Structure formats: structure tokens, C-alpha cells
Image 1: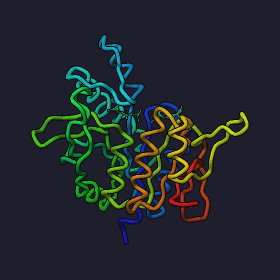
Image 2: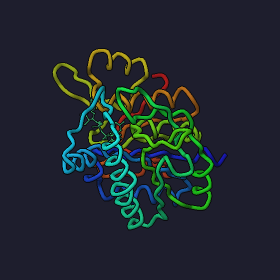
Image 3: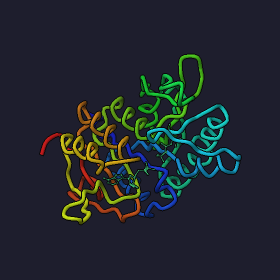
Image 4: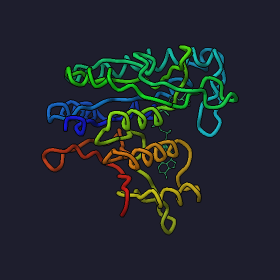
Length: 263
Ligand SMILES: Nc1ncnc2c1ncn2[C@@H]1O[C@H](COP(=O)(O)OP(=O)(O)O)[C@@H](O)[C@H]1O
Ligand SMILES: CC(=O)N[C@@H](CCC(=O)OP(=O)(O)O)C(=O)O
């Protein structure tokens, strides 16, 4: 079934300036090997930089940006503008037919306000996958900026991990790969930090409770676990700085931690 070839690849803002050149060629190889990749990106550090230029101090509550009307304007300009076009160009240079869209376009990501205290921060209520599916079927590589829109046409800032998870579920993707700036999920054993190759939802719950998993890793693992409880087969936390390699001949195996349903 063609939909099982979809791989949603979320690129974190932490790593957009430090992606290994082989990352882009690996994504192009995915296309050549029959996968249909969909890129979803964030851009937190770039947003912070532009907010500071505009004299606005970034503020976060539980990892989510407090987004008033002025902040939303900057978020939208950075995510759907500078960051989206930067990535589209990188993928184009690597040989893909890349096309940039945001969650506002085609009402791809429908949201509702999460909490008035956070301002224009949206929780995804619905993903309309037909536009993405159409682009994939025509051989495009969609590059999606994590914005959303509500029923009145108001735009919202959406956490990019949440957006990627919702898109993976709606497209019934085979794989969700979250590309970030660490080699995977780490754990401290006898004072030594080591990266886990596999982790189960039960272990993740314990690691969140004891503080081993914190900050920006929390939305990744929660989005990942939600996907695994649905139809997504594989969820990975991937190091975008590392050289990528091919294994199994047919499957791209990024270096990192896999979240697995059971051990
Ligand atoms: N157990 C953990 N394993 C790995 N990284 C963790 C863990 N707990 C917290 N983190 C942090 O999560 C960060 C990645 O999240 P974030 O900075 O939001 O990245 P991105 O911009 O890619 O979404 C890492 O740089 C790391 O500092
Ligand atoms: C609501 C909210 O916090 N939105 C994020 C959107 C970008 C994002 O998620 O970027 P990363 O992938 O770099 O984390 C923000 O404004 O930073």
C-alpha cells in the first residue's frame, strides 16, 4: 500500500544550521528508493534571534512559546519565510523537487487555541492530508512550516514536534524520524551518560517522571508515543549532525534511538 512508504522527517530548529551534508542526500536517496518523505520543521533558535532583533524577549511556559500578536508575526515570518525557504533551497540543491508550504496553506493543520495564557499557540485538532498526498503523488518533497489555522482564519504557532506527529498519523506514515542535535535519548547509568538504541513507552514515562527526559525532548517522545499507539510503525530520534548511512539495502536507518511499542 503506497501510504506505508511515507516517512515524516521533523527537523528541529536546534540543528537546522548544523545538518550534516549527507542528511540532504539521504533524503533524496529515500525518494529514489520509493519512499515518500515529508519534511516538517521548527525553528525555535531562529525565531528567538529575530524576536531579539525586534526588541521582544522570548518567553516559554513548559517548553511552549508565549505567543502574543507581535510574536506571532515574527514566528510566521521566520517559520513560513526564512526557515522554510532556507530548507527548500537545501533540498533543491541536493536534487529534490522541494516545495514549501505552511500548516495554514490548504488548511493543512487545523488548530484550536491551547490556553489563553499562551496566546496564539494552537493544539492540532485535524490534519487535512489530501494536499500533501497530492504533492507526494506528483513527486514533490513537501517542506512544512509548523503553523496552524482555526475555523475563523486566525493563524497560530504550533510546536513542530506536535505538528510532525499529527501529520504522520494523518498520512498513516510508516516512519516518523525526529532530527535533532543529540545522538538519541540518553540515560545516566553509574554516573555515565549513554544513548539508548531502543526505548519503550513505559521506560519513557519513568524517564520523564525522574527528570532524565526533560525540556525539548518531552514533546518529541510524547508525539512519538501517540504515533506508535496508532498506525505509525517506526519512531526515531535522530542526530542530524551525524553522517547518515544505509543499512538493509532498502531502508534508510538513521543513527539514533528507536521508540518501540514493547521490548
Ligand atoms: N534524556 C534526554 N536525551 C537526549 N536529549 C535530551 C534528554 N532530555 C532533554 N534533552 C534535550 O532535548 C534537546 C532537544 O530538544 P530541542 O532543543 O527542543 O530540539 P529541537 O529544536 O531539535 O526540537 C537536546 O538538545 C537535549 O538537551
Ligand atoms: C508553540 C511553540 O513553542 N512553537 C515553536 C515552533 C517552532 C518549533 O517547534 O521549533 P523547534 O523544532 O526548534 O522546537 C516556537 O515558537 O519555538
